[in-house]
Amino acid sequence: MQNKEDVIEIDLQELVMLLIHWLWLLVACGLVCGVIGFLVCKLTVTPWYESTTRVFVLTRSNQQTLTNSDLQMSNTLTKNCTPLIKSRAVMEKVIDTCGLNDSPESLASRIKVAAVNDSNLISITVTDADPAMAQLIAKEVREEARKHIVAVTDIEAVNNETEANLPTHPSGPSAKKWGMIGALLGAFVCAAIIVIRYLLDDSIKSAEDVERYLGLSTLAMIPVAETNEKHKKKSSREHEHVSSEMVKAVEEDAANDLVVQDLHSNEGEE
Image 1 (tube, helix red, strand yellow):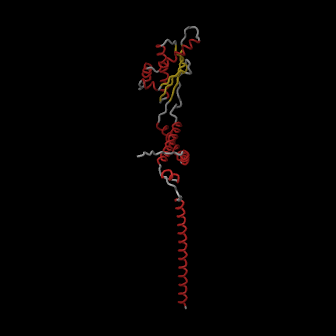
Image 2 (cartoon, rainbow, N blue to C red):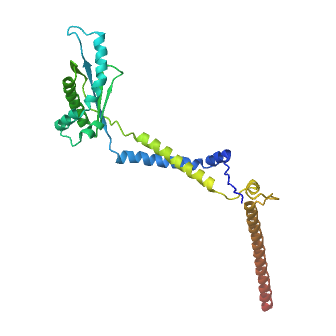
Image 3 (cartoon, helix red, strand yellow):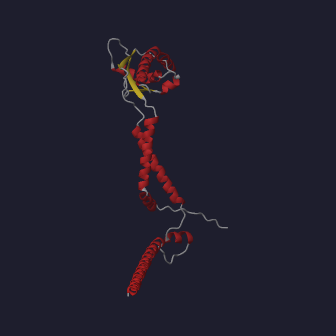
């Protein structure tokens, strides 16, 4: 026996034309899903706020002057101090001071620590659903981290560079971004459904399909839809013609009855 493998041919041009034909549906699905994403973000997702403070790490070899080597040494120590800010010891003290219900790991996940442009500055950003609490946590993290860094390392001082701010606007989530993601996702799913239906549709639609799948040559094509339309128009015209003839016949019969009635009335008078 000889095995035959079915080969699926995809006409990219036809596929593109199909998507263009259903472009209105893609746009409609994108708009609906975009509005849904926007509303879900506005109505169900809790906004969060960010408060940021910065500290300056300083060490010096000479108490009288500050040299370039001191700055370079401080820069190197800054990178080593960054993990200490989110250490368990600092997180536990902040939790006790602020009366939080978070675990040290949970609190550390809401804190971002990074060196500012490879300088001696360290940025501490805290995220919380309450703006006042975000400011308080950022302030306490900074203070506890200063004490912990000085105690662990040989750094002379960790000074405040910027106080923790009180956020007035939520940092996220972005309802516009959710709407855009929803719109793109809706349009993509709709396009995927159209393409899958196109690939799974094995019905014969043209003479090329007959020759490709059945191996037969077509002699002629009958436009069924057009023929049915012409047949309907012809039937309606014939119906109108018959109706008009029936109306004329009824009118003639009525006229004849009137003539007969007039003749009978004249004979009775005579």
